Amino acid sequence: MASGASGSSGNSGSNQDRLLKRIVAALAPLPGIDAIVLGGSRARGTALPDSDCDIGLYYDPRHPFDTALLQTALARLADAPASLTPLGGWGPWIDGGGWLSVDGRRVDLLYRDLHRMRAAIDDCCMGRIATHYQPGHPHGFVSSTYMGEVAHGRALWDPTNAFGAMKRLTAPYPGALRAALEQAFQWEAECALANAENSLGHGDACYVSGCAFRSVASLCQVLFALNGEYLLDEKDAVARADGFTLAPRHFRDGVASVFQDIGAGHPEDGLERLRQMVRETAALARGGDV
Image (cartoon, rainbow, N blue to C red; front, top):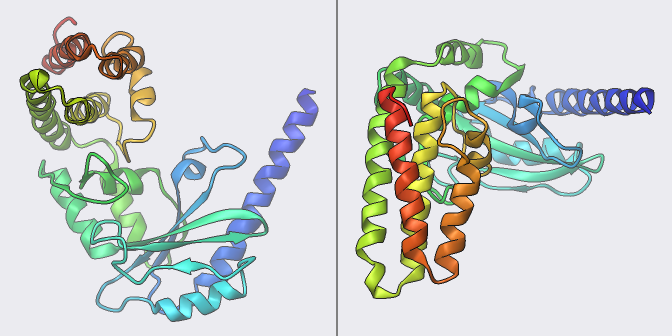
């Protein structure tokens, strides 16, 4: 069985390599595409067999690629017509992208503005962060997300080293970024919790849940920073933080109990558990005992 599993894994890797080579061969010749980057779980080596293949298309906004030409190139590659947005179609921070299938494999295209990313990364290295409203990110798009995308991304085609130059700025994890994230999101975790506690008498479980989510999401930002890890988005952040060396005890179970209590009509119990996790995280940030 071990031999069979190894062969299956090898075939999977070979299939992915062939897929990536086909994508690069089809898209690299397009004017305006400066780098093609593998991202997501496949770049991090944590992909499941049915995981999407995330492909970043990096461009200079002074001479961006033509999405009509991109559509034409994809027509020769995809199993069916691809669904593409214009540049900026998903907002200024996610830019846009599209979905397609190649040889039965799901591929997500993600547009990335090189100038915006480099400016955000430079700011992060100096301890300046910002959070922006963005569909798909229920807590908001934090500018340090770009640091994580570049740190974990794998260049498939980067002829001018545009992506590689940014990647060198992501390691080691900047101390100024850690301090900024800890300060901003420890405060937000406490503020969101206080808002939830102040609304307990109103019987508004939706609002309490929303405040609790923001508090938990903020704790995740702090915990990732404390452990020198980049947080890419809210999905699976609690589970990942639960495995960190620096994290509240039984963090994932504690978060689950918060929302179970709120849903069961006992929000005060859930918020008390959340208050404990906020305090534990603050103690970790101070370097003290939990």
